[in-house]
Length: 241
Ligand SMILES: [Zn+2]
Image 1 (tube, rainbow, N blue to C red):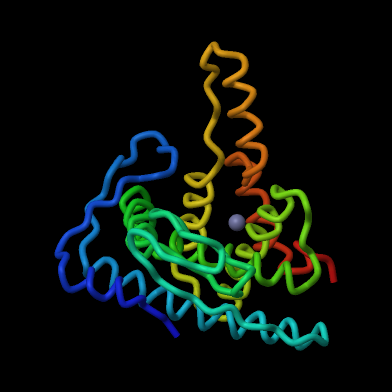
Image 2 (cartoon, rainbow, N blue to C red):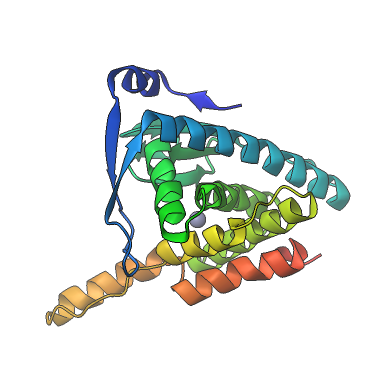
């Protein structure tokens, strides 16, 4: 089920066009901004809703096979900002909040990701947004499977891998369209850690590097490799048997 906040509804009524800045580092020759219409958001939300249902089916089944119940995370779309058990969520974000077992996503941001990937690859781009939801669901899966690490990069690598495992399952179920895997890889590359350019100020550079290290998701190559591992080997490639 897709839960829209009351605030989200009000926005939907009042806004015909929203322009989403690309919050992620731009790849070569891609549009820096895309215009996201309400129709784009509706379409993206429909894709996300059905992907969410497929994700829930998949992980319930896998947990059953592992002999454990899966506590299904809720999913909540928001715009602008939202309150959660993990604090106030900023725009242009998607995250899994462990405190209330909920996936939150900025619906305009995800629609923009799909549109940007679609434009770059000449496809519908939907898997770029779906991949992000699959990654967030991956955090829930990893935690419940007892794979939570104190190292944030390890958690991100596992979530990327589990998103790949979802793509593998979708392929097996005949749910993957042409271009979907390319879209996922493209989205992974876009969401890679920014490359730090030295400012010349050694202290500032050190502080920026430390901050990045704490929130590290991986370079383009790392993120794509982690996704590929799940795509090729399924969840056992991410968390063991
Ligand atoms: Zn993550």
